[in-house]
Length: 116
Length: 114
Image (cartoon, rainbow over all chains, first blue to last red; front, top):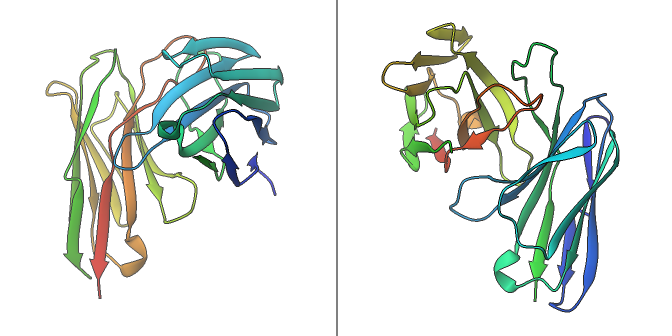
């Protein structure tokens, strides 16, 4: 699959488990994002990586830990989650032009996470 | 920080009618306003976007208008079809930082009835 690929598509984990979500983009973009999508809520921006450096952390609890080893891959490490963390986690990427103007963000299919 | 309000939360129309979704934003520095469509079980996909240097943009049956003074923008879908049924999200983003900090509205669930 081209574009932005997320794995796994579905994940069920206990509150004491440790798991990781993976995102890979094949678009040559230089910025990657994690969003959380809960029912009846806006898409919430969690983290932003630009040129492999974390540039935004929107008050996300430390039980969520992002990692960006290179410009094509983004991970979200999860540990000791709560049931209210159950949601669809979406990864996105975009290309930041030199002039600073914003461009389209491409989303992955998401990982449906259920915390039991 | 930026805050985006979107209305209505649900919209039901008959096939062939028009649909209008409205959004307001708070950060006057925002200059990029995309609209995404998310079908059930699928990823959000961009359908149209507008930048602050234009007031209106059209692409076939879809148009977006922007009023910078009032800080609101709207999505217009004409001649709606059942395949337009989906959740639509507006977003706003301010420049700078070398990345796209999109802040989304809560979404509008559009149902088009044959």
